[in-house]
Image 1 (tube, rainbow, N blue to C red):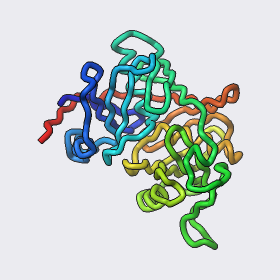
Image 2 (image 1 turned 60 degrees about the vertical axis):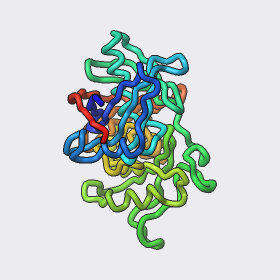
Image 3 (image 1 turned 180 degrees about the vertical axis):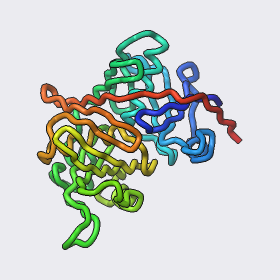
Image 4 (image 1 turned 30 degrees about the vertical axis):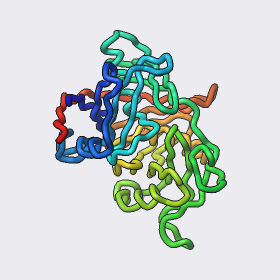
Length: 280
């Protein structure tokens, strides 16, 4: 099976084109085998595996998304730039409507290797995330460390089609993201688990972000995580409605538009190489 290796700001995907083969599918075990480090995706492995399908609801292309652990998920911001870029290059279109299992996203080319995506309105109700119980998602009751002296506390919760919990920190580079991330990912407050962001507000227009992704672990970039970080930061009065989000693999520009409350994500696309996988 041949596929394409792409990344968006360092967030890596294996992309399978099944637009002419509606029966094509990948089992969780096959996804894991493709995505594993040192496997068909190379030493770095993949954060997600994407299947391109024929559109179902009047869009230009449909996208199925699988995390590295084999679980199918609702959204992937960086892939939401990469897949439209492929279709734009095939068709010379400058605008592509991307279908997912939860939304139809409007995308536009803003440069040779730059795409902007309208990610829609963030979900801010506790049931949108979802949480296991009612809380004001502006600041939720989750702590890391001793109850009377927590290391981290007062995160915001946001849904960008998938669940996010965003902590604001003073020190980020030495933070034990690989230890804290899974603790929060599987916290009982999140019945569908969650993506965990660790954000340091550098100034009103700039956020340094690291993300522990649900089902993928620590990644170089997370598009929906960048959107969630900006929304959570603005709701807590830490930033304005737009900022550069600087992650380990690169930067995205996020604008939470006041006119309609839609979140616009802009960032890079990179086509790395072809890949091949031989199922056993």
